[in-house]
Length: 256
Image 1: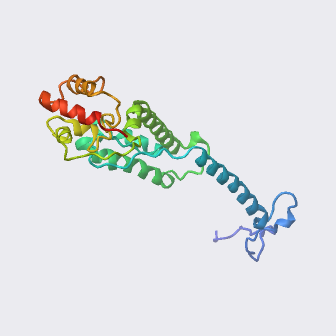
Image 2: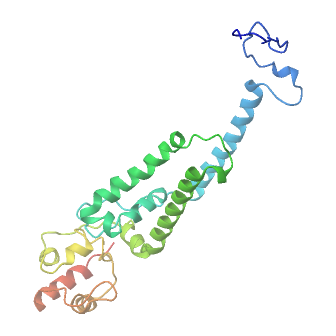
Image 3: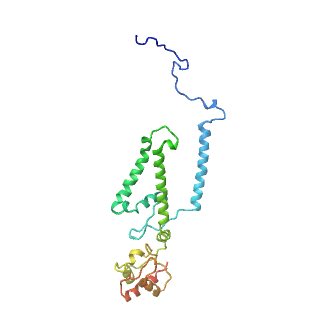
């Protein structure tokens, strides 16, 4: 049997001999179903965008950003809080194996793996299927990422001390403080620990502001000696009774 014997070649008239470029038909051939990009479609896009922009500007005027006081590097008691879209990473750094000596794991390794997998997902899962059940890798990873982000964000909001943060960041009136006075020297003495919680300018930090307290010297002396629950335990002040009197008089004289 010779090669090709008995074979027949049949032509198909549906396949054109001359290949034509794939040029779509003009939109005018589809009346009522399409429109020109310029200016019809683009004008609609601009109008919708303008509505959202005006609405956003009105929102910023009605609810301005909650500004806090000027950053004070000497205030070691201040607890910074990132914007809401970074709260899940902020919460992650609170866990044992993602903070302290393992800070690199929480700050770089875990986020790097998560975002790296997100970037590589389209290259790993190349299947043509569109049903979620047919793409378990992509769907499973996205559900895991959404669940982890939601949980960490929720935990960050639920466990944060918002009242203390509001007190720490409150903008306060500045007063002229005589840092050469004996009362301030007693206040800034590290053995008493006052400056660590109330700030260099007594504006507050881990503890409340001591400016314009409205308390009498005797009341201030009692708090300094016996503490004030829940944040200030007793016995923090280590000075003498004479130093305590001068300190309480100094604080009582600070007015806004």
